[in-house]
Length: 118
Length: 110
Image 1 (cartoon, each protein chain N blue to C red):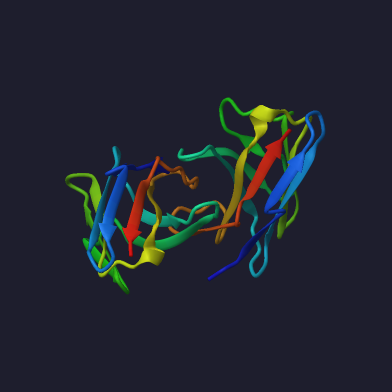
Image 2 (cartoon, rainbow over the protein chains, first blue to last red):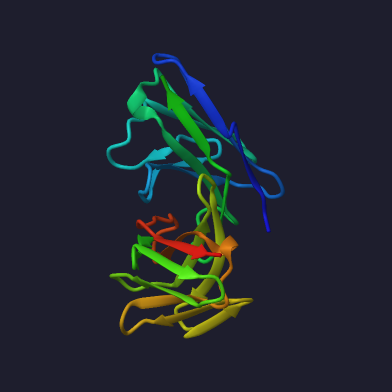
């Protein structure tokens, strides 16, 4: 199956700093990628849809100035957590689907990034 | 998409036993998908069943879909310790996004 690579897998940062997470589709072009956040023992919360060459679409309640998403190429989307605080500590996961905005295909997920803000 | 509601929330079985978990959804769907998540990892797609299908198999996995009851079940036969993971269902409707519920945490004891 297709591969989506996410980096880094773990990051610890100081409060107030920014952290960038990369998500790459290694063997297919992903015009659309999705970013999720997961709290311990909770479901994945869809944060935003990342669109290549245009602005991301954020879900209700997600601060777009806090979570900056850039999708500069067909294989790379980045999520930057700006001015991170301890409450931003979480597990962040990206995913991509064949063909982008389609309904009838599976999604491929990155390995996830464990962010800890101290 | 719409997130499914998985049931039970947690399931503990012995290796070799079968594991059954259920998923319910609320509105009409084009397809329903099951995913697995190992602890601290991303999700892995297991199987997709379309709305005009009633049953689908993939190795030790068997998925059923009952659109009249808006429910699906995932059966894992002859479970192994490596099957220990959280299992999620999600359905494709008129939206391309995939959203997820809390999942079923399956523990297979050796």
